[in-house]
Image (cartoon, rainbow, N blue to C red):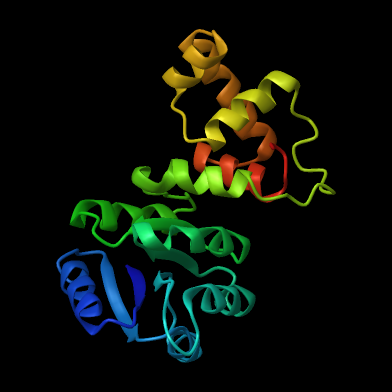
Length: 213
């Protein structure tokens, strides 16, 4: 059973999410918070595997709450909920430990899948915002001092940059004049070297630590 905490300042959103999740047999809503501070407090008394976290909230916003929760409960997964006009906040969500990013108007199937993905250690990012998100992060200076990614060769870094821009394997192949099979092999090598499970995690790490510019 995956225990889910819902955090959103709009009661109608909380009720809607709770109603959706109540129909899924292996998901259990263990609490509802209307701001980040309430979510942090609730987690002191109620264990949750995944937090559905709105970003723009009063008292304590979703960025601040994500940071506080990750400091106290590092194993709790945070799935950030966003809208198109809130995607500028997602960079800070990454910096503070959010594990996935979903649009509020996503389908029931997408919501349930994203919850399972973050619970299982993957990093779901809604395809409608992935390109914009990675482009925004890529334009922000990285740390630069990390040794993460130093074992990547130049071609792997080129492909990682394309991944960070939200390109598919087919699009990368066309851009770099490679076969799609060759790109798949490079992507597998990149994931192994970065010690991640999927391309989204690779992109987040690359952009967070300045591996690609």
